[in-house]
Each structure stands twice: as structure tokens, then as C-alpha cells.
Image 1 (spheres, rainbow, N blue to C red):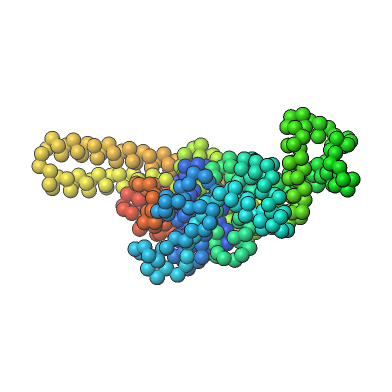
Image 2: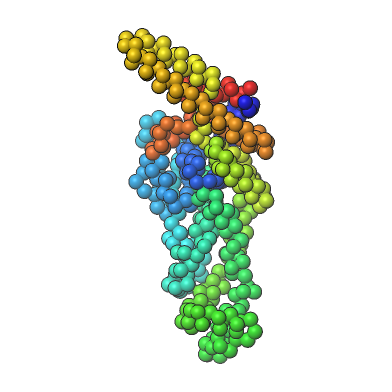
Length: 411
């Protein structure tokens, strides 16, 4: 058997992150509980007296259901914790929102445009509409911009960001640099200079281009037609006035993501493929100079060998006291015995898989092993149950079956 350190004795480290950081970014594979963990963090921060906001850029729409709401839109929605049982006297606050790319992009353009006419010129442009709706990375880019706004206005003490599954979350990490490269002046001048020259001469004639610009125009006009190119020119012209603002904002977001105010947590589960992806994400964070706080391993089967034996004997004794039919008693005990064996095997498997992860990383980087919940999280009450497992003492997690796993991994 693999010996694991008693990881969950250091549960204070996770609460300390929520107390001291301004931005917690939850990343990882799909289906590991990123959204529910993010929501639980925001609830916990509110209980700690902080003004928290949980933002999801994952289009799966799970955040609303986990918070017991029908829907969450592009505006922050306040969660009325003080009206719920167990939250009386809560000192902090909790808000939630789900990013809507198109609406958020339009809001961003209104913020950056120098006047109303410039704003309408941008949002009515066909190229802009295509870009804001479908351009690869636009969702992730506008997420970084919203993040910048929330951080800058000092409205919230803690922002918890729930990212899409890993393949899309890497796009989020690249987003701050992608638009800057897209709007690079060396590229823009191919499109802008001839249009600006035509404004001076009083005649718009991109066919007068020479060199690289001429080749680009010829290819694009052949594929899309000259009307499309005119829209493209208009699009770039509209963005020229905002280029410096965009560059400054993306630089600030990049600094924020790498600052001491931020931390990235990799949410994972005890499955070989998922843990492999989690390690890959950790390396990608390190490569980009982003502050990695640790792993949270969700959905862990916590039924240890010692618990299996003691649990079976306890249930058997109880059943003998009220079930007089020997045949039915024997059948019931056999079903329980098999169930105990299956649960113990699952716990052994999870223990071994987590042990392999520890073979590649510092054990202190696993902040928490979170016992698997019996039911899906669908409201605040179940989020609180998750919080007990995230932040509570090991002995209070649930029953002796969990203590058995902890005793086993404690060596």
C-alpha cells in the first residue's frame, strides 16, 4: 500500500488563501467540481466577513444551480445569505455572475470609446459583431477585461474565477497577449494607412496599395469581396483610437494574474487521466510565471480498510438485534459485506492514484482531499456541506468511515 501524509490536517492553508488573496482562479479538467468549489469558496469568504464575487466563464451554466438560483446573467446577482438558515448574522456578502460574451464586449466598447458616436460605429460594424460572437479567444479575452474592472473598482474583497475545462482555460491564460498581437500596429498599418490616405485625397481606393498590403488586399477581396474589406477597414480604424487603452488594460491584467494578490488552484479528482492533466496545468502555470497555490482533489472515496471492518461489524450487530429471519439476515449481511469490499477497493484505488501524484510533486501542494459527496450540489445547503469537507476538521467530515481513510493515509 502507498503511504500518504495526513494532508487534511493543514486545512487552515486553504482558508488563509481566501482571507488574504483578492483573486482566486480555479482551473482544471471538466467534471471535477470547479464550479461548485468556486461557489463554495465565495460562500465561505462571505462567512469570513469578506465581500465576495464568484464569476464563471464556463458556459455549462452550473453556477446558478449550485447556488439554488434559476439563472445568473451578465450582471452581478446578490445571494441573500442572511435570509437562509444557518447564515443569520453573516457579516460579509456574496455575489455571482455568469459571463455573457456579447453583452460584456459591448459594455467594454462603451467604456473605451471616446464618445457615443465612436461606440455606435464600433458595435454596428459587421466585423466587430462576428468577432465578439465567434472569434476564437474572444470569450476568454473579455473575461480578463471584466476581471480588470472588478479588481479596479474595489467593490469586492475577493473575486473567485471559475474557468472552463483545461483546454479552454489555457486560452484564458493567453488572452491578455492575443488581442495585443492581433492589433499590432505593424499589421494594422496594412489596412489603415491606405484608408487614411484616401480620406486625405477624398477618394477611398485600397487598390492603390503596393507591396505586402496589395497582396493582402487582393487575396481578401477575392475571397470576401470589397464590401467586406471596407467593413474590415472601418473595424480597424475604430480600434485605432482604443489601441493604447487596450494595451494598457491587458498589461494591467497580466500583472494582476502574476501578483501576490492572486493565486491559481488546480481542482482535480483521483483519476489517472485527470491527475495527469492537473500536473500538466501546474507546469503551464509555472511556465507562465503564474502563482500556483496547490491542488484540491475532489470526489475522493474515503472508505479505509479499518473502517470497512469496523463498519461491517457494527451494522451486523445492529441488524441481528431486530431481524429474526436467518435467511434474510444472511442475505442482507452478504450484500453489506460486498458493498464494504467495493467501497474499500475504491478507496485503495484513489489512495494509490493520489500517491502517484505525490511522487511527482511536493506533498504540501495538495491542500485538501475532499470526500466524495453522496448527492449532487444543487443549493446553498449542499454547498455548505461541501465547505465542511473543504475547511472542517478531519474528524468532523462525516463518520468513522472517513476517519478510517485518514488513519490509513496518515501512516
